Image (tube, rainbow, N blue to C red):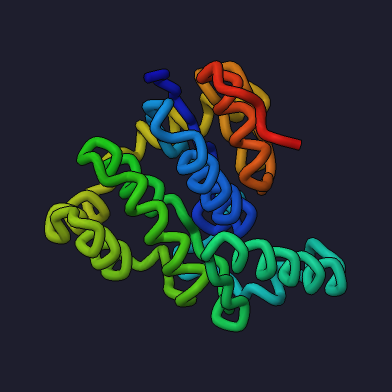
Length: 216
């Protein structure tokens, strides 16, 4: 059994990160049971300056990208997500929210052993259900839904706990050249960036585990 550490640097408002995580899940299933993966989600904020209540999605995106490019990207995401069992409902994605509190909650969930489950729940809440992932009640409900203590989750959010830890992790990765997400780092050395298909992750996993390469 080969132990592999996987640092998944991402933001919960990044659609390509959701796609990348589903691809990684698929790759892990294909390579199992030959590996013992330890997946850790590391924080990254695409829009750290957003107000707590967020901003209008369409207005924000129009300021950055061509409308045709946005439509094409959403179509690609929807198709690839469906193939991996994840539904993007862009009609529900009407605002972009500040994600710092979500990252604090994820840090705590990692300590409690429920980080993977909460990360998936956050992606579904935002991209499928259109929920406000900056709202403390939404966040604590999502935490409770993954088996975490909802009351403790609210305490973490209201207290500002793990602020320093999340900031330190953000600075650590940006200082090492991570400026786009998802950035997935295997054993601290092998970097895969972007919402890659499962085969890209499977190739790295097989290489590290000493397994035969992905068939052509």
